[in-house]
Length: 504
Image (tube, rainbow, N blue to C red):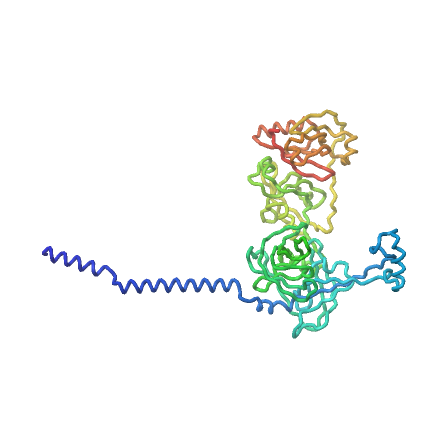
């Protein structure tokens, strides 16, 4: 082939390989169309996540929300108390004024309060807060107006209450089946999810407010607390009303607000539905709660406690005392760390208390404990917390007369427990140990709250009867390479574990 012919052939091949200008423009238009479509789909998804109106949800659930009015008879006062101080020169004047007006201050009077609630069954079961109906003599339920709803308020009776979770279950006899709502799974609620609160704020009648889940697993004061925090407006009168998710399911019961002035500032708390539903089921079946009872006193496992005991992580519940009860009968001991309960890992004391409380009374459960460097599984048959006798029986020991020697160890000055000290500190007969006579205020022991008068009953999970035994425990811990020593300390009968650094 001639060179010129070859050059023409190569040029022709290149011309074929290069796409035409018109084809490139078509591809660009196609890509732009695809991007535009994706943007439209994203906008649709956002619109679906945040509906333009909550009216459909309100229409769906509002008929199940009720206003609650309670009436309490308050005893009359015998004089003008609360108007003027007792003994005031104006006391006779105000007493005469009350007498001229029929002596109304001496008569019993009726006091009313308002709250909210919601219907959970067509036959008239209603959930509200315990504090809404507590000590009420009369309870009336007002229903959302509309076709098929009771027109007049209906009287309600109390089926059962649970002050621990501030939940009450009521019952009304209605002339027709009632509209009701169902509980949702509060564990699925995520921070940022939209929620709606309904109720009777400040006595203004049925009202709706919207917001988001601000936080989860809030604890306020009780052992069984599991609150959802929300910025949906909650005010006085909203107590007992429902907190709905966007599917119209109840995920919380509006219970409390955090506010310096008594009004909503965007920090409200609703008891999680997974707690409420269990309580409601028990109140409905038994008229009272029946929570499981393990029968131990516990504290959280801190990092230094975990290191002192040889645990891999600071998790579980450390047993500080085992009074008479299911745990003692099953062989649990003070110093055991509960790692698993009924097949569920124990994260901390709060998690264990809630799990035990939610377990059926009389159920035999497996409890995995860490004891003396190894794990052991025990089988415990749970009792009922409400019937539990919370009394500790001290272990018997030899009542030998202690020597009154003292020694400074780990920032503490300790001595054997004398008869005078036993009486002064109210230490039960049969309990022995070392009494702390003083604490170095610059020491770790002081920082961890140990004080003169505390009684050390165990060191390294072994009972103490002499100072030499404490010294032996310290030496053993150092030889084992431990950085700290675990002490069982009792104050006014209440036990707790404290881990002290051995370098002190």
